[in-house]
Image (cartoon, rainbow, N blue to C red; front, top):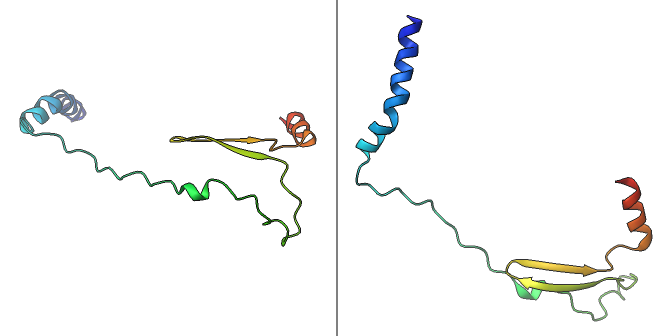
Length: 93
């Protein structure tokens, strides 16, 4: 009985692709549905440097943000980490 099952599986595996091609001959494959990429809200890519920090009593930021490319989005943050933070990250890695 076991040999019949193995033989049946072997025949099925050998005949699957030719049988599938015969049954689907002349049909175009269905394309996958594609969704459009969301648009980037350019106004949210940078923060105005007005007096936003005064009401919150926050210190001014020590870093500067530079947008190098919008598509794909590439942002360079200058001075994001302080020297102490960099040293700590190098120690723990």
